[in-house]
Amino acid sequence: DLLHELILKRGNLDITARDPHATHVLQKAVVVLQRDVYPFLERRPGRGDRFKKVPRGAAQNKVAPAPGSTDPERIQTSRTLLKAVEDIVAKNVMTLAVNQHACRLVQRVLGDCDCSRSPCVSVMMEALERDHEKLSRDQHGNFILQHILELGQQHQADLIQDYVSGRVIELSQHKFGSHLVEKCLVTANPAQATAIIDVLLSTPEEMLTKMMMDPYANFVLQRAYDVGNATQRARVDSAVQQRHELLQQTTSGRHIISHLARAKSSSSSS
Image (cartoon, rainbow, N blue to C red; front, side):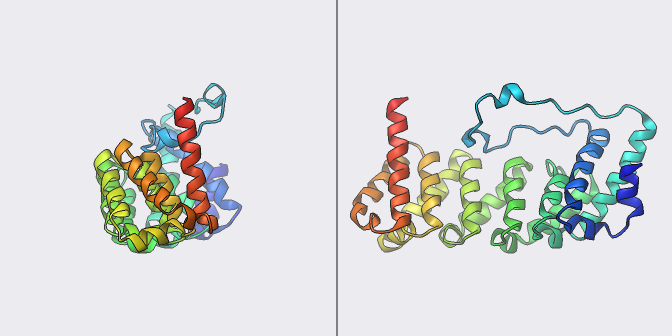
């Protein structure tokens, strides 16, 4: 009854999605409804999970999600309510994707981004894939692309990897685009990561120095060091050492020097 009131009776669901408080309730509602309608929709390991820091004891304290309903009547009701949400999100996906509060709802509805699961997911993905340019540089929209990289279907993630690999230098120096480049690095397969790292390290010397001192690109280079193989890490380290004195003069430069020092110290002690 509560979900019926929220979704069907309240109206203006797109406004609810953008409300800083109501959107959290709507997101939880989607989780509950998806559990009934798509019992197979489980949160599989993300492509970048191996680089995430897991708090001590988190695995032991994790609570398994409650199972979905087996009651046919409730399942049908849940399907009706979920379709109402999916329809609204699909019709307004680009507006909601770049909204501070609604972008999380878009991610909830996308789930694993499997277009065969729902026609609405297919409509959403078509719209999102047409506008990588806008989303990659948007403060909130770039999180939609990060979600697809981590949890979407492989061919969908590959499209974003291809888009970013052709704009590595430009996006690395962008406040929000740089986050997307970092996510590409940690979710990439070895060939995709190598493509990005090679572009970063093959730039002219002057540009590489600029990137090391850039407040955003220097974090991309740090991530490249983290995910690279031994040869790539050595190339990053050598490039930083060659500019050590110059980098020490800027805050961003000192960031990358410190990061490499911590990483090498951690590696030698393990």
